Length: 237
Image (cartoon, rainbow, N blue to C red):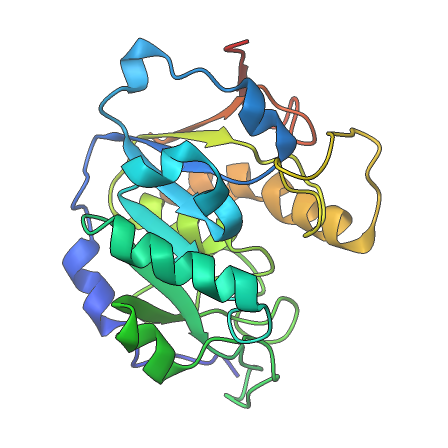
């Protein structure tokens, strides 16, 4: 059974809102330290995830996606709350609702609750459990179904596609695990833990999804590490 959600109807307001524009997705892999913004991306929509608040680009974000560890990591919660206060022009999406199996039962994943999301003006979204009903693959009709999850970057990509973005530039998407952030680790192309393998498998199916649903969209990877050769590579070093 495919689980549908009534929680996402508000996303209809975002359909094609950025039609034809460019966007940059900032993740927290160490390669973000090598990023130098090209002039042609000065006006691009900027999206960040999770601990991007440790990078100055967080002050320029249009959208921010987060959810995991909010209620179990006090420092992370404090930083998310501060980002919400400091960047008033940014729209926040929180993976508030726990992941669902195909029949709608909650898997127990997810940490931030509905009340906490509203308190910091975050828009709650549902994320499916990969391999269990919703979350089997990338989702086009995000106003009807939970986002394909596993890493918060995946919902961000689905959202950008839904808004009509024509070019998406990936920064800091290095396939490291959750502890390998730009501010506390060096990069490695040899990462082979379970999380990294899952992420890579998910990214590897993105091109086919775009070909079938958004044929005019292009994905670029800036200073790629783990995603090298998967999309069109761009170097700004």
